[in-house]
Image (tube, rainbow, N blue to C red; front, side, top):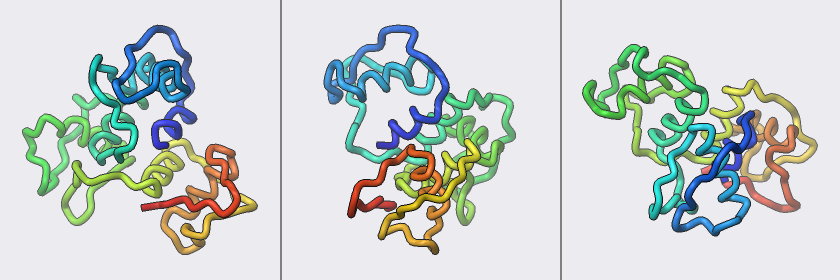
Length: 173
């Protein structure tokens, strides 16, 4: 689900062949989307490895994807201080780049790189990056006006990035 959202926001084309992940059906729409993401440099496809289709992204994985997709230079970013990520952690350049770009930040002094990204967090981040706005005619019962992701979810629906089905829930968490 999140992969599809990332794909919708990327302006690029397929230019080559990529090897399929073990858990992605050959010739499927998802495989085609993953090939595009690989060609763009947003993801690496490694033969005989699983894509983990049904697993949520971690905050670090999302940061890494966004740094690659937005072509941010992690080597030029100032190193932030997070209590849960050592300055010499191999993940720090990516975390530094995404923090410096003000796309993702920590909470209470921690970056929480291994925490799972919720759908609500993902749409908020993507709506921010792409300055997405809009008010939908329909909403989700589990994302009401007071929800922190309400505006982002509304923008996704209004721009037809997410097509809401009758009585469908968004499942923000």
